[in-house]
Length: 309
Length: 265
Image (tube, rainbow over all chains, first blue to last red; front, side):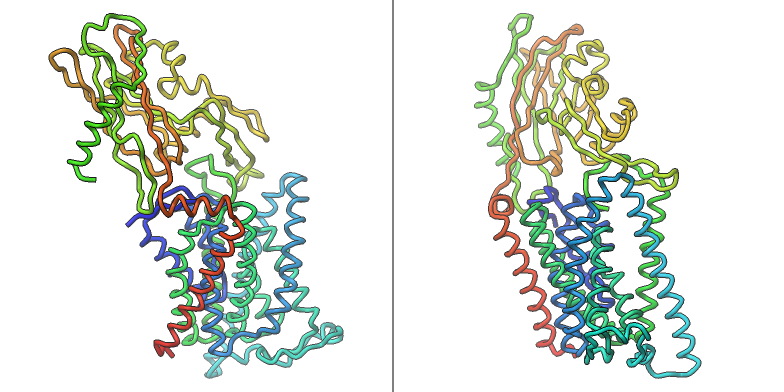
């Protein structure tokens, strides 16, 4: 029942780890998030050192997002063009964010600022999505609409944004934007993600829904496509520079998560866009409540290993 | 490992270790059993299914002696983060704390309470018990003046949670024999203890004095796949990283393909 992890230097019950992978993979396939904001603390709870938990999670997300991307691609839910622009922005933003965090840390007191930003971000994104999708669900119920997929009008564009150069039609998403918009949004999410030390799925998904006006199901598939690349990069850098990827732990996790991602995708197909949004909003709010509780309650141990959030 | 195998190893190792054990006679007359210390097994292999090990420390002593068994890792620095309340609002990691002059692993067992056997000075000098360790510890922080008592107590709680520190008074069982005594300590070796060499030291105490010391070692080492993966991760990090990514991608796309093949939709 136990497996020893050569890098984490600890022993875990492999059924528990496979179960964790399955649960988080399911959320990944369902909502298009990497799930790092859930998985990293869960791994720390079973005794994995924080830096190894975060790096190894990135490795298993490569598998879960590959599995999820393939499933969503078959359903026609991956906008490769949009994903590519977001990815370019994400890489640039990530690199800038890593430098920014060094400057912030050097000035001192940055950790508090980062934590507050993280909680406020999670809380406001979660609340906004929850209220918005609740209203949409009520409206749809009243109108007896079949699907809310049209809730985001394809041709709706901001006045200023439509005047930007490089206007491009994104066929899969059915929207037209300047190529600069997804790149800029990618940079924005990349910077925030790097500062907060998370993958950024929970930020990227709302950005795609509300700012790029993409249909929910395409958002999920495209987000997974993008996450696959960012996590590949993170896995390599963490293995190469920090030796913090535990390959055996990653295998146990991905055994669960690749199946979880498939199940999540199938479940997602059965749900309407607003139902998906409200579930994701509830998940984000639950994580916010958990983080706030941890921040307010006195921890049982006042010492911890270095690294992690 | 069966009981029979354990017994055979026990006998073999005991024979070797009795010869090899470093015995320091500090005083007294060797009219009966000299103090010995044998750890069985004395080598712990960390394989794939490793979840700690059962160890036995045993040997001979004089009939009247009280015994203390101390298992430690060599002294080193522990680099940790400490938590505090930021802006009087949130509990979070506030800075680093470096503990030195204390071992990473400390397991103390004895036949009876150690403060009944020896005076404080002797306990401190020989690092026997938590208060003795506290008298040696050096704690430094990048963010504040350290209150040693409070932060040493936190350190003990942190280490005890991972089973790396323990004090078990009364856990060493002594059996009186014709010419002396034999003793035995059964030990659950924690899987959290990292690979390395650990020292096992037995002290014989009589009339408030340490009369004899004997030592042995426990070697904990990675074996098989665990050792190979660890080597690869540290000595060929690029290949290790690429392998981790390729396997993740193959698993992800592979399962995706299988699901399609299974006609799930």
